Length: 69
Picture 1 (tube, rainbow, N blue to C red):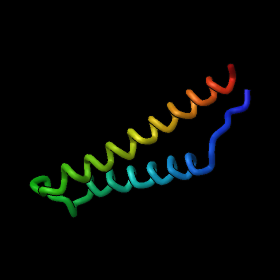
Picture 2 (tube, helix red, strand yellow):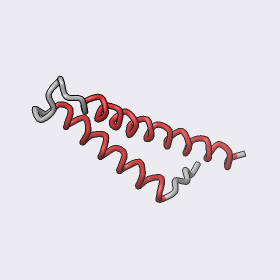
Picture 3 (tube, rainbow, N blue to C red):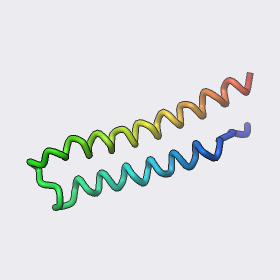
Picture 4 (spheres, rainbow, N blue to C red):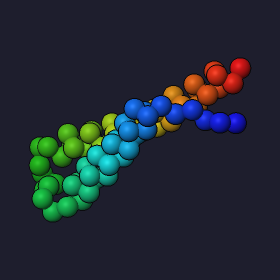
């Protein structure tokens, strides 16, 4: 079984992973204090990036199931 993955989807997944890791690293660093008003925004961006990766994987699986039939 050959899995078909489009190039833009792979690039999107890689960028989401990199940005998600950056946001998590930024949250763990000392530059963001726990009382910062932007902490929830950075957390939301990180969650969105990781959720987008999961949804991209789901899209790949569904497309391959559709093409298999």
